[in-house]
Image (cartoon, rainbow, N blue to C red; front, side, top):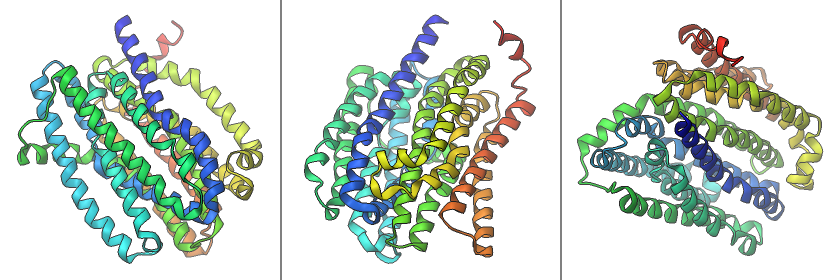
Amino acid sequence: MGKSFSSLASNTLALYVLSFSSQFINIFLIPFETRVLGPSVYGMVALGVSLSLIVSVVMDFGFLLSATEIVVKHRDDCTHLGRVLTDVTMAKAMIGVIIGVVVYGIANTIPPFSQDRALFLLYYGAYVLNGLLPDFVYRGIEDMKSITVRTVLVRTGSMLPLFLILRRPADAYLIPLMIGIGNFAAVLASFVHLSHRYKIVLQTPSIGGSLGMLRTSFPYFISRFASTFYQSLNSIILSWMYPGQAVVGHYGAADKLLSLSKTFSSPIADSLYPYMIRTKNYRLCIKLLVLVMPVVLLLCGTLFVFAEPICLFVFGGGYAGAAILIRCLIPAIAVILPTYIVCFPILVPMGLSGYANKSNVVGAVVQLLLLSGLSWSGNLNAISLCIAVSISETTVFAYRFFAAVVYGRLFKPSLEDLGE
């Protein structure tokens, strides 16, 4: 058990380093970008990031969950893992081609994407490359340290030059270009390491095997796509309603904080996932939430009170308007961590993966209904949109928590142990 906890802690730390390596650079890079590009151009960059989120989720297609579970069960069979790696990589390549056709069509015909086609195509390319990263293998064998070190080094090396070469709004295309260079190097380094360290190598491609992986992953894909779709839809709607206006950049800045809360929560959930498949130690999840949530709520309260000076300090003088949007997103930020932990780390080991997958669909439906109602009543704007986001995120949490408690009987075996 001690070794198991040590592995869990090591992988959680590695995932944090991997996730926050980009965030750490962004702590300095985002204020630099917002000042160099200005709210209007940065709004286009934020829209590119929103497009990239959709590309990333479609490229993953749920493999980060379905393939990780397979790797956990066959972690000592390098031949089987090589087959899984090949099938997933080929499936991702097929998906990437399909996405490319769609994105090219959108970038040529639909405003505001057609206003800067090159920028959005570069974001597409950068995140298709990122989608080829074989991190599901490392998560399944619980060795995130190896991929973290290589990925952090190459991504940092590719992003730091932006401080020297990003000088004017017209240079915005350099951001996805440098991201793409870093992602390509990270993917190459990971495949080489898997081959040398674990003898996990690509095998002869199999159309049948790749299609089988797509079928297995489809329910997970629907779940993750629904979540990312309604998050990215917000930037697209605002860009359509207020083309070239500062409010799009204000929302992009506010949404960065919501994304940061997801970045904070994701490594915990992702490292718990393979661990929970093996151990089903639900007590650990409950104790973790009891320990961490008071800190989360304190930070949310501080952010609510000091939203405006935080925006001015972090994003610059033109972003005071983001403060009210951040305050409207506070409920969503507060429930992200418990939402992530209750989802796949708890529901899948309970045999309730269907509820985990359906929860994001429920959130997407709620979001679309709210946006439709706001649009019909003439009340759709940046503030009401952020309130709708908070309602949708809290609905997703309530759905998952209800399923875990009622159908998974989460607390019945655990309450007695909380005092241990």
